[in-house]
Amino acid sequence: MIVSKKELSEFEQRYRTAFVNSLAGFRQAVLVGTKSIDRKSNLAIFNSLIHLGANPALFGLMSRPDTVQRDTLQNILDTKEYTLNYIPGTHYIKAHQTSARYEKGISEFEKVGFQEFFDNSSTAPFVAEAVVKIAMQYEQSIPINLNGTVLIIGSIKQVEINESLVGTDGYIALADAEVLISQGLDAYFVAKSMGRLPYAKPLL
Amino acid sequence: MIVSKKELSEFEQRYRTAFVNSLAGFRQAVLVGTKSIDRKSNLAIFNSLIHLGANPALFGLMSRPDTVQRDTLQNILDTKEYTLNYIPGTHYIKAHQTSARYEKGISEFEKVGFQEFFDNSSTAPFVAEAVVKIAMQYEQSIPINLNGTVLIIGSIKQVEINESLVGTDGYIALADAEVLISQGLDAYFVAKSMGRLPYAKPLL
Image (cartoon, rainbow over all chains, first blue to last red; front, side, top):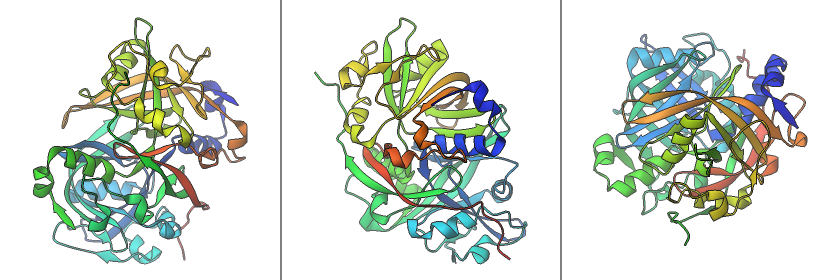
C-alpha cells in the first residue's frame, strides 16, 4: 500500500489523525503532573517525551495548544515546575482516562484514581504509583510555527527510581518494571527485550 | 534511589550519558536513509522521531552536531530528502551497527548488510527490509540553543506499508510486524500489546 502526500491530505480527518499518529511509532507514555496557580492538581498523559541532552540533562515535550494538554502547558508556564511519571503497564486504562477533557480545575488524580505524592523537589504532584518520578524545571518554549505546536524544554531537578533497576553502567532497566509504552492515540504496550549491544565500532 | 540535579551533574560522564538516555524511555527505532551531494548512500539509526502533526503530516528528528548523525544532518540539508525506515526487531544487531563511526562516504548499507531500495518518491535510499518506508521532504531546522542540538522538521511525501497492518480506522498495527523499539544507547525491544482503548470521555 502506497500513500502519497496528496492522498494523505485527502484522508477523512479522524482516519488521517489515527494513521499519522500511529505511523510515528512506539514511544514512552508519561503522565505529566502540574499545579495551576490556584493550586489545583492536574495530570495528563503525553507520548511526546524527547531526550535533548544528558549534560545538562534536558527533556522536551511537544504540546499542542488546541488539546486537553493546554491546561498542562499553561500550568508549566505559570509555575515553572512539573513532574514526569512512568507507570506500570497494568495501569494503562487509568492512564488513558487522563486524556479525557475534564473541566479546568478538576483533578485527574481524583477522577481517574491515581494517588498524589509530594516531596520537596517540586510543588507539582507526582504519581505515587509511578516507577520513575522526575521533577522538572521549565527552561524554555520553542514555538513550531509550521503548525502551531510548542516544544517545552525542561531540566531534570531530581530523579526517583528503584535502585534495583539501575545497572552499574548507569542503564535503567525500565523493561524489568514493565513500564507503559504507547502508540498512536489509544494503543498501549510493554516492552519485550531483544537484547543490549556493546558500543558499535566500524567493522574491518 | 533519589538523584538530585547536583548528583546528576557529578556522575562520571559515560554513566550519566547511559543514565539520562535510558531514563528518557522507550522510543521508535528508525533508520534514516540519505544521499550525500556526491551521491554516496548513508544510513544511520535514530531514536528521536517526533510526531509534530497530522495535517500537514510533519515528523521531527533531533540531531546532535557532534555525533555520527552529523553526516545524516548534512545530507538532509544538502539534498532536502531523506527516508525513514522501520525494521523488524530481528534486525536489531545490524541496525545498531549503523551507529558506528564509519568514514564519510562509506555506505552503512554495504558495511552493515541492509539492501538499498529506490522508488520515484525520493532520491534518498530506502531500506528494502523495512516494514514501513517513509519518504520525507526537509522543511525546516530549529536550533536548540540550550545545548546545540537541532530539531529537523520534515513533511511526509509518501508512506509505503503492508496494507494488512492498516485498520479500518487508520490505525497501523506496528506491533503485529514486531517493529524495532529502542531505549538508551544500546537496548532493543519489540512491543507486547496491553490493548487499545476508546476515545476517553470525562467520567460522570
